[in-house]
Length: 152
Image (cartoon, rainbow, N blue to C red; front, side, top):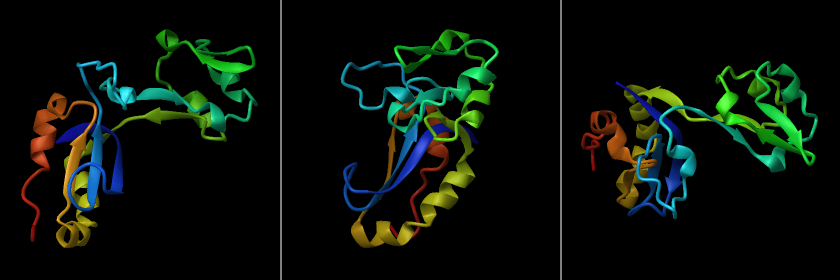
């Protein structure tokens, strides 16, 4: 079973009791004004720009044949409506200022990763938190890897 996530935050202590792994899922149709993770709204990967990491070489601009990236007042601007998700700009970006948010993962890979922290869950009364996005957007994927953990 495949699903879309942004990342897995390990050793989380703010999303439930004990030590937890928080799995941030992609996809949400609610669009809450107070949302802390708007990058999770779309179900598909999205181009992210972290200005603080940018070294202003702007070599990413030269590889994009669709003019998705431009310089506006010495800042990089992204014209997302033109983007074809080819990834050439992120490959060219050596500073990590441009990156993709979100990836498709297999449920068995998620299970393998979170079971590495099983001892922490058992000792602290912790576990797994599904966050997002909205986990119900990927209900089948979430149910697939949420059996009772051994020893908990």
